[in-house]
Picture 1 (cartoon, helix red, strand yellow):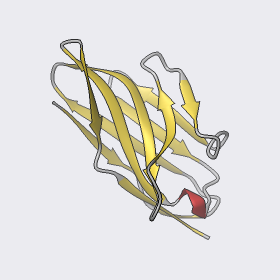
Picture 2 (cartoon, rainbow, N blue to C red; picture 1 turned 90 degrees about the vertical axis):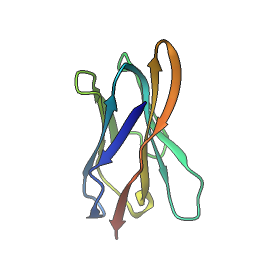
Picture 3 (cartoon, rainbow, N blue to C red; picture 1 turned 135 degrees about the vertical axis):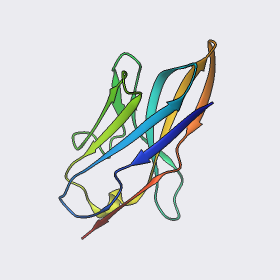
Picture 4 (cartoon, one colour; picture 1 turned 180 degrees about the horizontal axis):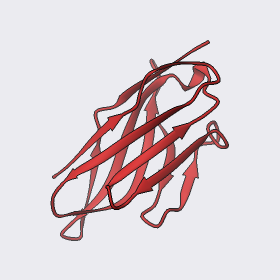
Length: 119
């Protein structure tokens, strides 16, 4: 079993920055791809950014150039640096991880962290 705990969500003014963190804990696992999703009120959850175990990244078009996903494999932690925030970035941000346990893949979700961007 793997637990994901996000942190870093906050209320910020438009144009500001936030850094989200997601720490994975448990035993006997190896993290593979990790992702950040977000869900705004009344909208479906959307994929924001992906980082593979090797460090390759991919972003949604709406955040490209503003957000940066990174990971610390030694700490089993993934980050999302968010710059030039706009009110449209307001959402609950969720961490998602694909973890291998005895070579079997499992998907895990964090509880979410709220980001509110005021205009």
